[in-house]
Length: 163
Ligand code: SF4
Image (tube, rainbow, N blue to C red):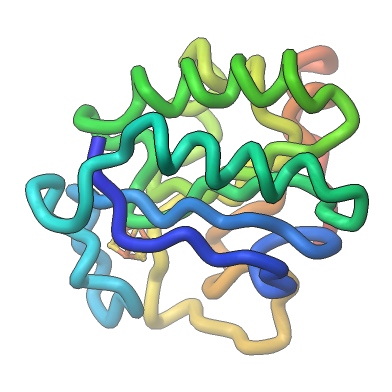
């Protein structure tokens, strides 16, 4: 897996102050995507042990609410297995921290993936420029949802984190 950035004390990609991993690779190619530089999975830097430790150091800080996986798409074929392993590792090391994920895939697809069982909140779906709404919380267009994942999996219907 490759990545473009790790941002710290981030307030724009989920509740509280978070560490955000911006992975490389996205096949959705949404028109007017704000991050087209992240589309190529071969671009960016190799994600290795040093980067993992960097994330863990942030997550160990008491004021950090959790981690957000973004990109790019964490569920791109080049990323999904490593993101799954990372989410499991974070869940066992930092059980009190939340894990958020942004993906261009819809909930109907994501809920069938093993990684869904390790995510607290998912922002799903491609960015649709015609549905852009700057008033929305944590999402760019109104087709996307901010989903409480454990509650949605348990109930069998989508439970929203916020409208
Ligand atoms: S899913 Fe996200 S990163 Fe991928 S093209 Fe769409 S807006 Fe850009």
